[in-house]
Image 1 (cartoon, one colour):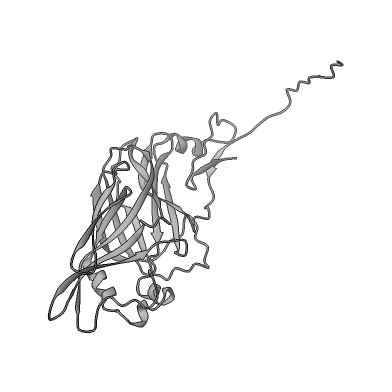
Image 2 (cartoon, rainbow, N blue to C red; image 1 turned 45 degrees about the vertical axis):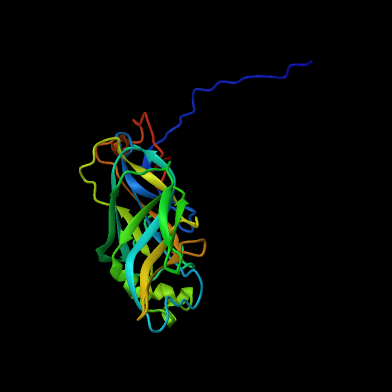
Amino acid sequence: VENNSEASFTDSLTVVAKTEIGDTILADKISTGIVGVFKDSVFGKSTASIYVQPLLSSNSLVFGAADEVLSTDSIVLSLQYSGIYGDKLSSHTFNVYRVDEELSSSTSYYSNSTIQIQSSILGTKTFSPNLDSTVTVSIPNGIGGSNQVNLDPQLRIKLDNALGDEILAESGMTAVSNDESFIQLLKGLKITPQDTSTLGFNEKSLLYFALTSSNTKLTIYYTATSSSASISKSIDFPINSSSVRFNAFSHDYSNSEVEKSLQSSINDSLFTYTVAMAGVQTV
């Protein structure tokens, strides 16, 4: 067999690389959302928040009879876990805010999008994530009893009951007739980690949530009271493939190896870096 292999050598080629701030990325219509904060000695602090839009479970909702008084027992935002990056044992505090700006499915949302929110916290929870154990929830059956249901691992955050009462007051009205009307009443929710300015290196974690799972939703647990009885009920507002849902990311490279690389001139960079979530990139 004839051997036609050959080799060549050159010493005149120079590869020049540098680290620079990455471009923003398209971050909407996501099936997996990231919330949390993680501080790495090399890459600095990365923070992730999500915006989600609960919708109606069906059109023309009626929450009770005309002679019943409806009152919220609790209103819960459920987010099904799908993964974790970082310290699995760390404690988190997540805050939920009400979006104060219309979200549109025809709009492209990027990782640096800034959406107006109401200033007051709608709900908050301090917790350590448990991605291994099911969650047992008591669901009213609508006839005076309840059913115990085991659900996939999830984060459940109680929100201000006033939001539940606001929605229940629209029973049978235009606001709950279809999704287009409902999102004028509740434009969306932002879930974000509480400020962690004193975070040390290699602390906290980024949590992944299945945003189009049937377990990811907003639920109002309420009581319908008439002259003859009080009955516990519940109604779901799913977050699904029709919902606006997107991630927002931010990075702080202070006192990290990436910061040194960003400050280096193009000719003396021995290391370059690339990081996800619209972080730095190598050019």
